[in-house]
Amino acid sequence: MAVDRFGDLRMDEELQNGMRREIDGKPRIFYEGYWVRCYKPPSGSLEEKKKLIERLTRRAFHHTEQGINTPGNCLSLARAAYEAETDPTRKRVNAAMLAGALFNRATDIFTSIVDLEHRGIAIGPDNELMKQCGDCFQEALDLGEQVKHFSGEEGVDELWGEPMKAFLMPIGDFYETRYIKIAWAMRDIERISEVMINLAETFEFKGFVQMITAYNAICLQVCDTAKYDPDNFQIWPCYVATHEALAELCARRASDSDLTLRMLVDDAYRVQWAGMDLISYLAGTRVPMAKSLQNFLDKCESIHLRKRMLEGYSAATG
Image (cartoon, rainbow, N blue to C red; front, side):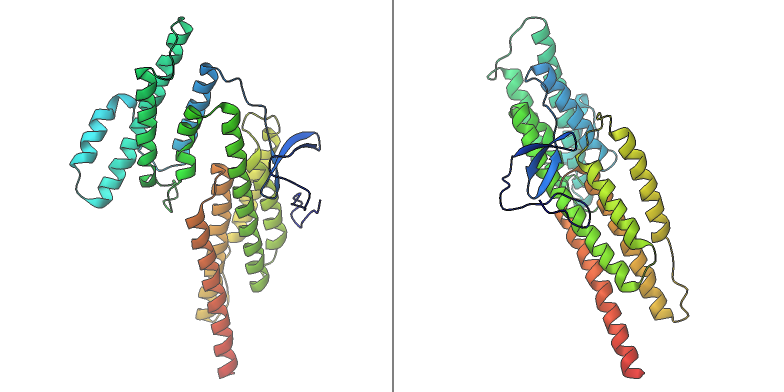
């Protein structure tokens, strides 16, 4: 297996998606060119499924816009407000709030199902409570495209749909779907890092290449390491320290006397900051963010184009 500049174990012709190996003492699974850290799924009991759904729901709210974690007992109020709103911008927010209420109602119902199981009352998949729970998850998922990432850039449908997938799928199968999305996020982290390094080299930004390389490496670890993993207590402090060091570099501003050049260089620094943030978002959500990625790539291309135009103008006016 080849090792690239960032130290990743990359794809060769013999590797197949889903292959598992122990690498450096850690179990890993291969997907889409990456060896992703994998974990033993919990048992398939309703109690374990409840814990998983609760954890995924908290995670979804953590990475999405503020104000939409509506309590499940406010579902009727949230629905009435959504149906009554006519302004498109406000209606989108009401839709997100309704989606939040539906998620929490589904979790409340599933918690009740588990409580009944503890009391010896069996609840089958065709039970009315199960159907209500599934309906709430489905409607929340349908409204998911109205829910934005906390950065405000785009929706996070992949993340928003995870609680419902955990409800419908065996836990082991659900874990497999997560590994694929983590691999996609890792791929995008590396792509952004490479673009940032290219931009830093183009503008001869001192210290950036080494720091971006380090930031890329630690964010890949953040992306595929569970919060309950003991390794996280070394990885997360390293991530914070590296993020802060890179942020100091991105906060620099140009000192050139030429106003046009100074504005260009300052914008290049700002684009580096945007790339740093986007890598952080990907490492946290562990799902691809295609719209944000394309917006970032477009910004980088615009900076390169402006630089070429400025150089052409300078050469022509020599």
